[in-house]
Length: 263
Image 1 (cartoon, helix red, strand yellow):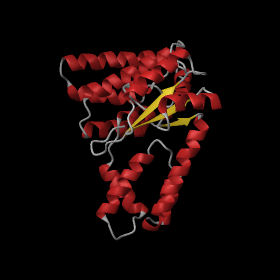
Image 2 (image 1 turned 90 degrees about the horizontal axis):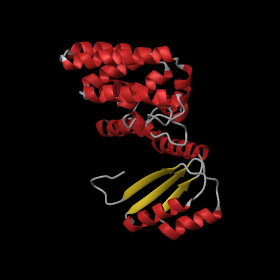
Image 3 (image 1 turned 30 degrees about the vertical axis):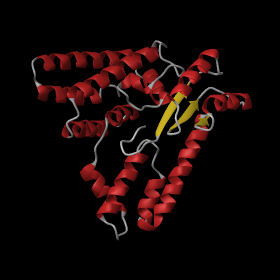
Image 4 (image 1 turned 45 degrees about the vertical axis):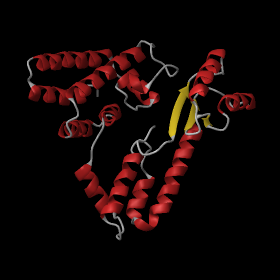
């Protein structure tokens, strides 16, 4: 993550190996060559078990410019703690109803929620933010990303997935990106079914840089039969045809159908 206004850079590196290999050490050596005091590294290991020896290896290459997250449960607990601390800090500026609502939200949309709150604090600098104000602002300014659309399909929320698609259209998300995202989604499903993609090699970049948890997409892939997937592929071919003849309105209609095909 790099921000134009700040010098510091955070590199988040996910490593799927179960142990630190010679190849990994070579990789660390290359990373060390680009390391400066303004670069911090977070290593996320989903398979590696804690070892003091491993920690010493990291210190050798990265001094104290790193953080290690060993397991997903610990990471989720840290996220929950962070959210609770944040809510506690702003509790005097929001009403109880909004505070309770924030505590029920998952980590997928928490960043967007806090961006919304920051904007509301600017709009109402000396007033308490109510749940009603929050929802009204969110409804008016809600902008979805491609991963929201795919995630709503995975969760089986038909109306919501169509609503998100219309929102993507409203905010002029390029049609080619939306279509490519769904194509990558289908390809990923097929590869999971064929065991070409597993937990060890899954990446968010498979679905147009879309942040979807592997367990969610794995369960969704397994429960969907091949006929439904082929129906989606046929619809994609129809969409490709309408692109060639520039029938944009037809494309959006078929994208809506595509949103509910895999249920």
